[in-house]
Image (tube, rainbow, N blue to C red; front, side, top):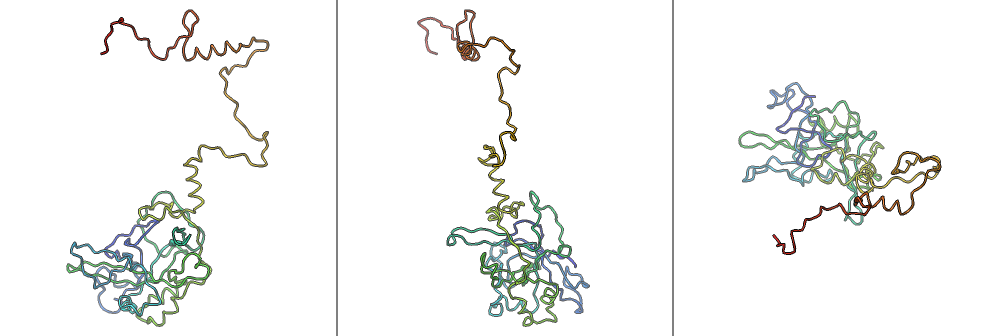
Length: 334
């Protein structure tokens, strides 16, 4: 599989949002038709193309400020209405593609929609999360058996000076019964290599024969778990985005007021089993048998002397502040 940047740079992350670049697989249309388009190898059947998430139609006019912006209402497309939309209908014949990712986030509405609980959805075992941000710049779609392949459509915007911007929208379908408790929609997941190849083969497989591929993902391979609200901000790119909620909450309690309290002993733990530290004493030396013990008055006098001091006559004298020498009754304030 050849890799094409498509005018954008790809950086892996724990929290990729609309407008960021994602890896997309598509088939080149140049095989057997002369020279390949610029940047595409003529012998490649498949391309791993880096595209901007959020479709920018090819007919989009460049704003006056010269900045081409992602249209957030184009990050997803309902599969049931593809043929009815002029934006998507023109892409069904030759511009089908597959978005590749490890998993995705979805929010469950709570308390009438006022609050939302985020989930991380994936296949296989729970992913191992590393601290900090992902540092690797590589792209691989072949070595991980747990990758999700999502049906998608792409478009190419071309500017007057010849620059090209590849963008993609991910198709959605009705949620399965199990997934509907989180959300009523889910991405179109192509679960087998045969389904992936059929969707990508625009030259030989018309869209009408691909419609069955757009059905909900009914195979029992999806798993999900709750994550924290840390993922709610696209600025957050650390591993905490994918960490299970209980792990994050435990760490927050330990860093918060909870660190001032020692855990209670277990119910089956007796006092003999616990190793309580010995109380500290003023005199670490053991007392001799028969030694005369100080009286209460002597103890009190000793404690006072520790902070105030004892003068040469045995009287308590305050030494916390220095004495001020008197200059006489007529001393003036300076």
